[in-house]
Amino acid sequence: MPGLHNRVRGRDCQPDAGEVGRRIIAWFRRAARDVPWRPRPLGTKRDPYMVLVSELMLQQTQASRVAERMPEFLARFPTVERLARASEESVLAAWSGLGYYRRARFLHAAAKAIVDEHGGAFPMTVEGLRSLPGVGRYTAGSISALAFGCREAAVDGNAARVLMRLHAHDGQLNNLKDMTWAWSRAEALVEGVAPVRMGAALLNEGLMELGASVCTPRAPKCDRCPLADLCAAHCVGREQEIPRAKRAAARRVVYVGSVVFVDNRGRLLVERRPSEGLWGGLWQAPSIEREDRAPTGPEIGAELALSGSAERVEAFTFQTTHREVRFEVWRAGEGERPRRPGASWKDRAAIEALALSTPQRRILLGASPAPAGDRLV
Ligand code: SF4
Image 1 (tube, rainbow, N blue to C red):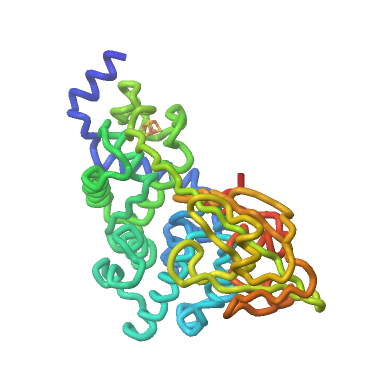
Image 2 (spheres, helix red, strand yellow; image 1 turned 90 degrees about the vertical axis):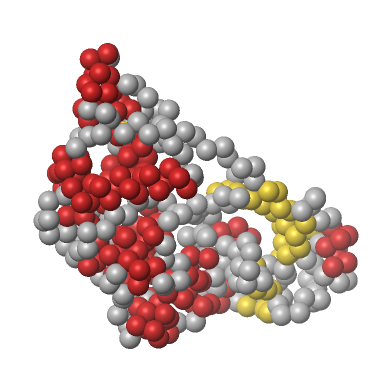
């Protein structure tokens, strides 16, 4: 398409920010999906607590899973004060199934900081918001625009992808320099938006929604895109090449032997993981982990001081973003009382209320897994 190519080159691949912003907002008003964290009518100021919860949940969990779980979380902790007063155990339990539990701890710590250091009111500036635990540039910009109507940008991976394609910027989403470039383009768009009520909020959300539903990583739907005739990558047929793919790091393999103990009252033995690291602070069946190979039956028997042997009942693999966790599940014989300081016997109802990772929910409760950012293979 030489004509289009020239046309884009002729304007130096710099589409007019005001025009781009107007089109994104108009498209968003027509095409925004219904999700629990987006009240209608669009452009309504939101409760900053709701924005904080939804943004942290959405960071590494699929939107459909967040849509399922967020109402339950908010019913349990309807205000920032209630969350601040809650125990960490109950917050982690409410986060079960969303994965990446570090976010739950940050959310809890941010709620405490808002209550203890800010009298229960959210800071209204980006700088003030960024002083809260777990709140980075993106979340601060998002809260500031969505809850307080400030003219602030918020750039996630979806927004950055649209911006890189729009300007045919040959960048990568995990590259600091390229993301800094994307932030500067987003800020220019916010500046170019007419000073209408909640204009920046509509623009930010519209840009991210466009990236999530139209300008998708693979096979963008350019024929349905409101920016198609302004888009430099599309005009030269390079939309599939931009942004450049990042090389996936190999997942580290971890081997876990989890042993199910049942007492004569039908209770199960559970223990809490160390607070740091993978699934930090969550509960599990007594487990032994190795990095080189799966623990054998005799090794498990020796480490747990079993009087008899355990039976291997199941094996499965669970993938997180950075690890491939290969589980082998064992069942101990009747009457076994393993050497496991800190472990305790709990009935099914008590275990259901604990913070459990998806694989441990499967091991202890036989629940069919509902992957969230993690998956079973
Ligand atoms: S025209 Fe295609 S590549 Fe360009 S922003 Fe729209 S969907 Fe993305």
